[in-house]
Image (cartoon, rainbow, N blue to C red; front, side):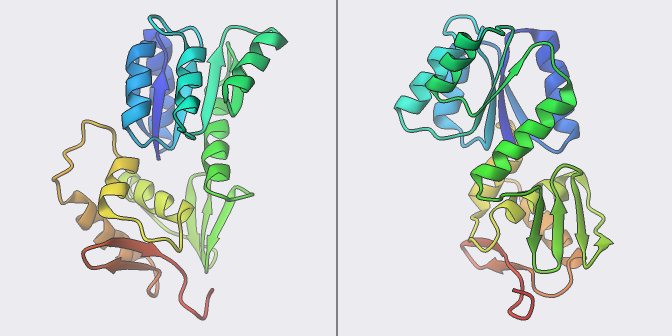
Length: 223
């Protein structure tokens, strides 16, 4: 999953980015409202962590402009403002969740995962596709109760497909959602990783549709 982190406190941004990366997210960082607004407009993020106190353009304005243009990306607001009317302003502008500084890094991760899961239409943190199961909070896959060993990159790809199971996901969409904007999008690494993942999954759970993309869905007898 790919996340935009809009935070002007460099040290805090680094800590949050490190925690998110360690939890399997691809992270782009914006240090001001102008950059955040632009990136949110042009890049397909799965979620945004947005500080309201951004320089140049404040976070509340950034959020309002995104929502005015129809951008529905889930947004977790971070702010030092703890007053209810300020929180209310954030929700009215289109925030999906709210954390007041200081906060625990683990809570940022858990709340982000919940926002992404719900936006993909999943009610619980246990995602199933036939016998394949993903514990979102633990970041762990299993098949028929047995753990599936994945590298960090393999996990990112399979987790995105799991959130969007039974749907054709193009190669471009997959790249856009599992790597940050510095990734070489002409690389064939996706195809290599898909091949490795397929070897680790029993049956025909993960299919390639030639020239179109990939589908994760259970065989008919597991559906």
